[in-house]
Image (cartoon, rainbow over all chains, first blue to last red; front, side):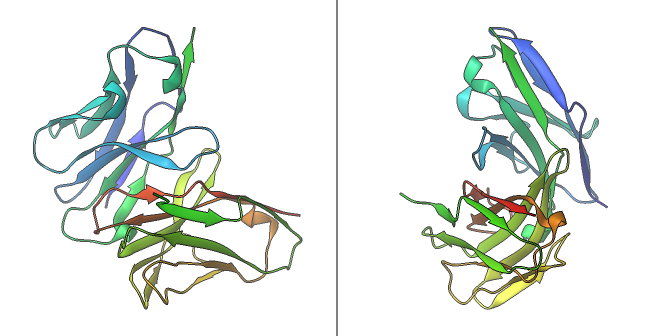
Length: 116
Length: 112
């Protein structure tokens, strides 16, 4: 069975310091993995996705994530936080055998706060 | 470039009332879905569609109906609103099964 666990419900960093948002997954198949960001009162927006190509994936706004199969992790990082990064972030796993949107599993989200 | 459009943005219903949340996309996407978002729960799939005329249930389908008569539109109907359906509802679409989702801006529903 698939599952996705975001290890922190809330992360707080100072502006200019690194960001680490942690995501572990379990999947019986070779997964596709996504990170989405949600700003207040908005829908979710894709940050980046992994689909079995390069294990280090670069996304928008300076974010990147590394797929580590041995650790079943897909942590999201950014070298230097900006105030505009304050939002909620969701890790999503999908089976990679041509399933439908019924096979997407969302993590419960990590709220990122950025202090001046 | 509209993307996914949801209406209304806000709605207040009394228990037992019915209503339809509208969702339209202009990207010719085959896949569409409805999610509800509740604090601390992430997003939970209500219903989804893999093309016109084809729908299926997600994780939390009870109390909701959908239909997909065109590629563009995927309305969500609440048959008899209950306070437990107070939530923020998101419609999403994608070109293929594991393509990234494009989300609308949500409908905030309160049932009193």
